[in-house]
Image 1 (tube, rainbow, N blue to C red):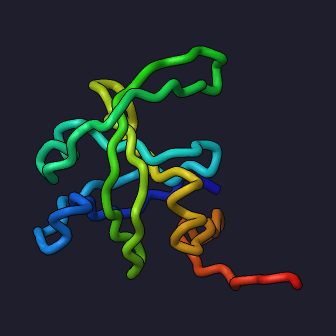
Image 2 (image 1 turned 120 degrees about the horizontal axis):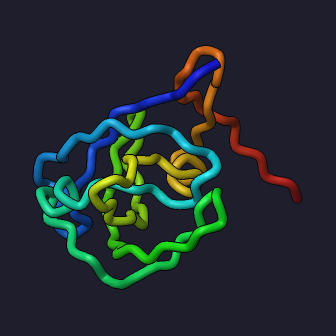
Amino acid sequence: MGETRVKVGVVNLTDAHLKAVEVECLVDTGATLTVIPRDILTQAKITPVGKIELHLADGRGISRDYGNAYLFLDGETIPARVVFGEKNDPALLGLTALETANLTVDPVARKLVKQRYYHHY
């Protein structure tokens, strides 16, 4: 098994009619949020709305800007909080976006697959 990478379109929430800017992301189910390089978010006219503390797998903490965007992935359009990636930050598609789009990872086929919706009551 290896890495799963997908193309993600990014566009500003208020200008959803604009053409999305595409970026290839590593699907990371261990990452809560989606990280997109700052230059891609700037090109998509997404502006920071605050700062967020992220805890890395090695125990370090880092601070990054975050904003809000629409993400286009696997035929779905979802609103998402996105982290402004800095120079050496990888572009990551995080778990929150996957769950919002009702997608999971097939690690053998290295692709995203639809999940069933369940509701217990």
